[in-house]
Image 1 (cartoon, rainbow, N blue to C red):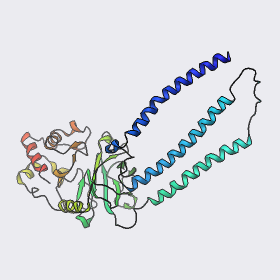
Image 2 (image 1 turned 60 degrees about the vertical axis):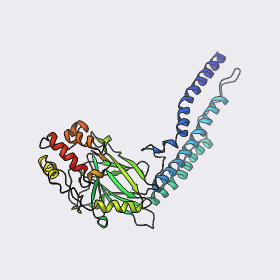
Image 3 (image 1 turned 180 degrees about the horizontal axis):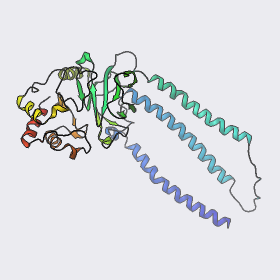
Image 4 (image 1 turned 120 degrees about the vertical axis):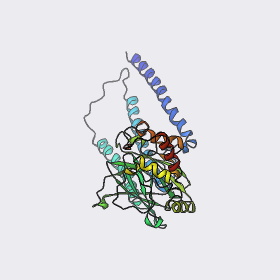
Length: 358
């Protein structure tokens, strides 16, 4: 009976190891693909800056300690199964109800592991609380809306406002002050930093804003996402961090602080008024009132942005026409409504006008 039981157990264990090889093969295949996956917009291991790398190193340290604990625990478990397995002729083992030495050891060992992991974790959290000394950070105010992101730049750059696209200079720390106009959101640029919750903050208590910082090592476009469920279009609340060399960033900021040459186009402005767009949007490059609440994004220079509808659509003529024709069909639940129905002619006029705001 014992021999049959052991044969059955060995067969089941062999099949179990074969089943474990399937996900393991996928895991190692994924590791081999990591260099090519660095273009993956949400790949947190494709570090884009100092903050991301520091958090990644902290995660890997914790991961390897957890792996070591798992290996030791499993090794002890299988050793006990093998060492004390039932064998013909063996008497029933002496029954014991406790071992003080072992109990002290398996209390002290996890405590030591937690201390070893906890001390550098706490140290790193304090180190990363503020951007590194040296170059002054670019300070940007971030405001979360259902379902888009607003970015307000400092007065020394012109005090302009953008939506969905956060332009930053390469190598320079970026300090963000985070708040929400409605519900709780979470600001997350996966390749640049961790997640930071964004809370509604009354104008009377600005000190309640959350803060975070990051820097970007290389020029490029980095994907961002709201990471806190905030309503029906939570998954479509995206943004893009556009990292540029310092001179290109300053040139971009100079253009953003100046009115677009086409902003005063009379035909476009007339369609803008007929459609009721002014009820929620402005085309304004001047410094906004800190207490001003925008119902919809500021459309100054909207033609130069990467996306429309809170990061949902690529910014081109076709998508803009779709959005103006029926916002609810593109992004169900969006707060953009059309108080006055737009004719096809008005839609085409608005597309030409808004796309010309470069």
